[in-house]
Image (tube, rainbow, N blue to C red; front, side, top):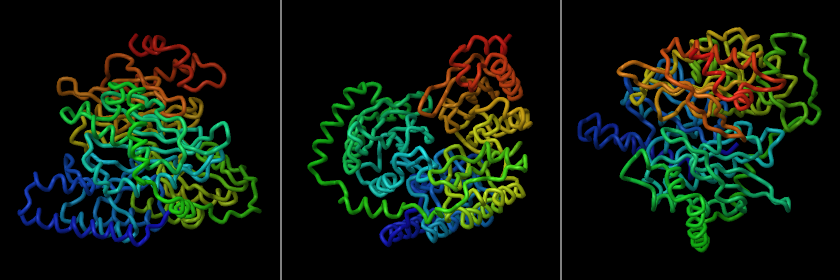
Length: 544
C-alpha cells in the first residue's frame, strides 16, 4: 500500500499547524463562527445537532494496522469509545470537542492520516473497489490511479471552490463494488479490442434529491492521460456549473441539461487544449506509485482447502469470505452489522482488534468498504478459522454480508442537523425482525439502504429495498423504494406508495419479503423477482 513521502507528510503537518492556530483564534474570540466555519469545514469538522463531528479521510479505503489502531485510540481518548465507518470509505467521530480537534489531527498526522477535503465544494475522498488488488476478476489494481488522483486533487487551486462537492470512484473489474455510476465521475479500468489497458469515464451520476446514473463520456482513455482528462472534465463543470442554486449545482445537472453529447464535445475540446500544457506526471511517477501497490509476499504453497466441519464457521465462510486471485488465499469481510447494532459503528476495542488481525493475518493491510464494513484483503485460507474465532469472541463474526441485516444507514436525525427522520432505530428494528440467520439466508442477497433525508447519504436510491425518511407535518415518515441497484446493473429505486411510521415500515418490508418468497423463480434474488413481476404484487400486499 502507498506510504506518504516527505512531501506528503510535510503537507499534512503544515495543515495541522495552520488549523491549530485557527482554532486557538476561534476559542479566543478573535474569529467569529461565520469566519471560522469555512476553515473548520476544510478540515472535516462539522457542527451537528449535539456536538462537533470530525470526518477523517481514508483514501480509496486502504489503511494499515497502525492507522487502524490510531482510529480506535482516538475514539477512546476524544470521543465516546466508538467510531462510525461511512459510505465514502471514511470514518467519523460524532462527539468531538472543538478544543480537542487540533490534537486529533496531530495524532492522525503521526500515522499519515488527515481530514483534508472531507468537506466543502472540492474534490472529496476518492473511493475504490474494496477488493482492489485481491479480487480474482480484476483487470488491474485501480488504487495506483486513485492515489495519483489524490495527489492531483489535493489543494488543487482551480478546483478548491467548485459549484458543489465532487465525488470520484474507480474500479478495476467488470464487477462494480464501488457504486461507480452513481458518482460525479466514475472510472473503470478496461481493455480494448487490441488487448490494451485503458480507462472508461462515466460522468454525471449521483443520488440526493435528483438521482441520476452517469452516462459514458469517454469509452477508452490511455492511462497516462487520466490527469489531463480529469482536468478537462472539471474545467467544463467549473465554468458552467450552477452557483445560484445549490440544488442544481452538481455536475449531474449540468450533464443532464447540456446532454451527454454536448458535455462530451466540450470536454474533448478542453482535453485537446489541456494536453498541450504538459500536466501529466512522467511515466516514472506512475510506475513509482504502482510499485508501492505490488503484491505482498504470497506463499505459493499455501493450502487451498478449508476444514468446514464447524457449522457456524462454515456459515461465516460461505457468506463473508470471497475468492482471492491467488490460490490458498481469501478475502474476508468483517461485518459491522450485528443484530440490533448501529450499522457501521465499531467500538475502540473492536477497532484495535481488527487492526491486530490485519497485522497478523493480512499483510498489515485493511480496507473500509462503502457498505460500512471492514475488509481483510489477503488472508491465508489456513488462518480463516483462527480469524473467525477472534472475531466471534468480539461480536464481529455476523455471517450476513449482502443479506437483509447488512444495512447501509446514515446517522439520521440522531446526529445530523439536515435529517428529517431517524435512520438508526429503523435499521435496528429491521435487523431484529429478521434476526434469524436461517431466514436471512433463505431470502438471499437483499441489499437494504436507509437515508434520513433526501440527501441520500444512506444510498436509499440504490437499495434493492430503499427507505427514505421524510417529515410529514412534524412527524417522521418513511417512504419505501424498490428496485435500486449499485452494481454493474445500476438502477434507481422507485417509490412504492405512501409512507409509513417507524414500526409500519418494518411491517411493510416483511410483507414485501413474503411476496418475494412466494413469487420468486429458481435462482432469483429479490431484485430479479421485482424486476420481473413489477410493483403491483408488492403494493397489493403492503397496502391491501
